[in-house]
Image (cartoon, rainbow, N blue to C red; front, side):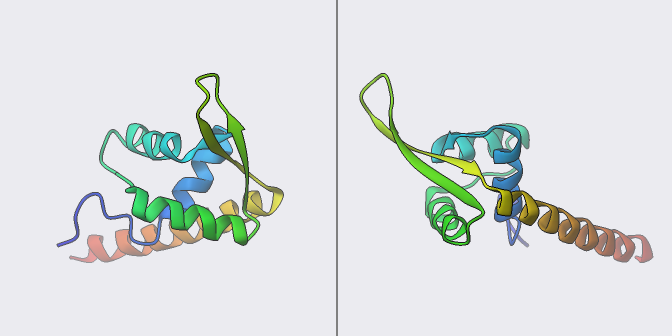
Length: 109
């Protein structure tokens, strides 16, 4: 049985959605937003998030910029691009189709 924190193919959707609502977040803030918004049901680990962010940046869905915070620490801030907004629409449609199909199967049982 899959773990409740297993995102299985939905990580891109979650990251893009979070960045559509709250632009210019760093990685830890993205992880926290997913956890908090899902009432702590979904958890993203650094080992999953940062490769996904790098991949999405290479795909042109997000843009990243290094900033120096008031504390002197550097942080890489991410924001959605125009291509990322389009991809978010695609990912949301795909998610709705999959969840609808799963719901149909569950109703048959």
